[in-house]
Amino acid sequence: MHRISHRRTPAPPQEDRIANPYDAYDARIDQALRTHKRKSRMVSLAILAIGLLVVLGALLFGGSRREGRATQVAVGDDSASVAKLLGAPPHRCQASNLAHLEAQFESGTPRPTMDEELNRLRRATVARWVYPRGQGCVPDDGATEIGLDRQGHVLWVVPTHDKRPLVY
Image (cartoon, rainbow, N blue to C red; front, side, top):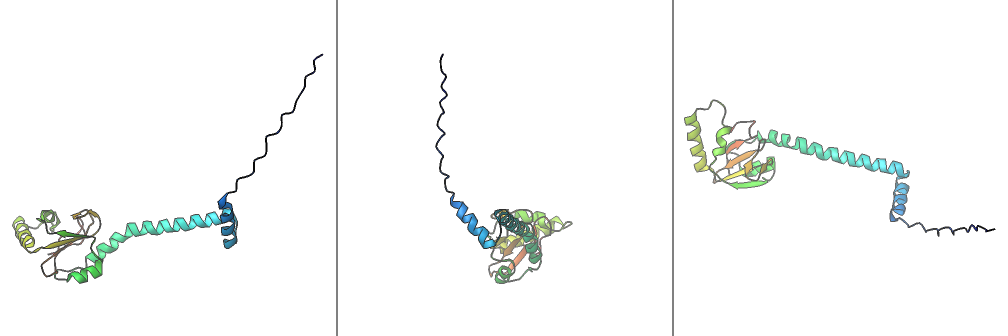
């Protein structure tokens, strides 16, 4: 008779647990907050959510505050007072042919009046300041644009492109 020998295969050697450097960190945070890991993570998530809400609110409502302040800019104001009211302009641009201002006149403005005023503004404008919402010197909808004369005074203002008319 043959004997079947059942040899026990040796158990695989136990591996030592690799120390996670964050375990000590987690323990210190839990200790500092006097809470457990789950609660500290919930607090961290709450802080992140509040931060995201603040950033989102600033992005959504920051432009409307600027638009409101832009309506306070008047023709003849000094550029320093404009910078104080609206902040430093993100885009300081050369005076262009100002053709884009044709669409900013109040509806019903006669064409000869528009042409005459645009010619006057072209001759007198030496710089344009364009506030956010645009690709550099090309104002997008909602942008604020201000034209300055040689003395640094406001010559014309578009408080909000495609929402409020040109003031000159």
